[in-house]
Amino acid sequence: MLILDSLAAYPLARMQFPGRDLIFILIVSGLMIPVEATVVPLFMLFNRLKLLNTYEALILPVVANCFGVFLLRQFFSTIPTELEDAARIDGASSLQIYGQLILPLSRPALASLAIFTFMSSWNAFLWPLMATNTDKARTLPVGIAMFIGGLGGTTAIVEYGLIMAGASLATAPALIVFLVLQRYFVQGITMTGIKG
Image (cartoon, rainbow, N blue to C red; front, side):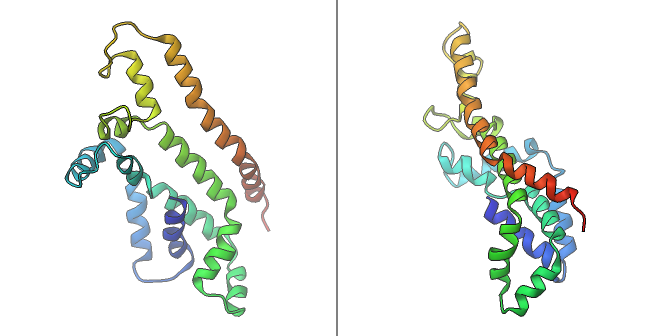
């Protein structure tokens, strides 16, 4: 996802072409559409493609998103153009500038986006509930809800111990991802505080 979002954000931030601002406005307007409004068309599309109850149904809707393109475009715009001009003088192509200059300088923004994306995907409930109907393909939040019994569970007794164990296990990966990428947050805060 980071690759697709950054590939879309790079030309919007660093290249001049007709319709660039209109494309960016359309992407930003996509942020105003609530996820719940897209669930039914998405379900119909995945049903026609025979992808329901598969891992692809859980992965494909979050491969790229408007927020990621917006965040990275804004960050790419803050990188000085002199660095890009110097790379062009040295003979670098646009793809080389993107891969060897822009992406390494954008680690804090990419780490932040990775954390946001991971958290939203890890905690997703509505779409995984609709897209899956077997225990094999369900996500952890949907599985925890099954212990309550309101989502098709067979027991009338609420298993509080199992729910708490599942919630603890669900918290661990998110905490690990945050701790691994935390230093990039600090770098991002430091970089935004320095004005030259």
